[in-house]
Image 1 (cartoon, rainbow, N blue to C red):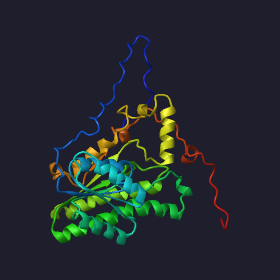
Image 2 (cartoon, rainbow, N blue to C red; image 1 turned 135 degrees about the vertical axis):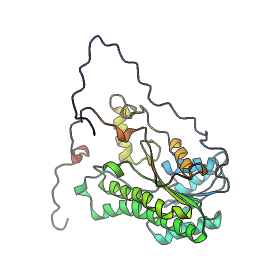
Image 3 (cartoon, rainbow, N blue to C red; image 1 turned 120 degrees about the horizontal axis):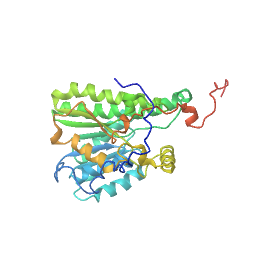
Image 4 (cartoon, rainbow, N blue to C red; image 1 turned 180 degrees about the horizontal axis):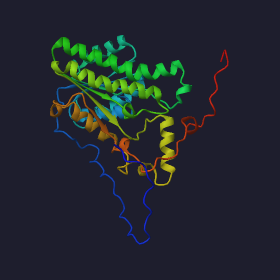
Length: 321
């Protein structure tokens, strides 16, 4: 049980100054590998949303370990650029791209067909594609709700279902890694649509790990913390910029006293799907420097989400609006 909140003890004028906190050490440099070279040689890895951001960073670490990588997404130009970038990663196997809207089960099946024609049935599926934006719950339109849930939860399910059915029919083992979010446990004020969808994704991990474990299919989750990257959306980048401009900067808001490097998430994904993690399934690994577990001795003042997002009082729309 959490102890009752109280005011922090008053500081003593005679107490010696505490040494500066160093935070968690920086990771090894880009290009280092957490697993033996060639761990994924001869394996096919399919990453949704692999053309940008954290999906591309995850795909790069699988490629570095020798995997044949298939990146899936909706934007042809992004996929083309990412394909060239990933093919240049030292140690990479073959790389291809599949245009796919994961909300459409027929296009999902076509993406698996394309992957199979290029390299063979994927051995690993990383469900990274998602949608999100901040919004007070009362302002969420039906279309806004569907847009996020259809991509984040339903799209993840369509990809997972297709992967599982093909492996079950072939009698082969496989590994699924679902990218989640910590507000699947805590709730996500300002992100009701995404939090509900990510809670569903987390539940799929726990449900399918039991259902498909007897057939050799692992299902795990991976939750990123704050990993700044060039492809962050404008609203998330804006929040990060505001944090960076505040006293102490963005790092002071993390127990690790630093943010994550995208390659660290890639290392975690390659481990979870690797031969070295075969007895790990139904688990969600949080890679965020303990930020989601952070608590204060005294909670900060409650600021309504509408106020945080700079919105005025809520009013029901007039008929016809």
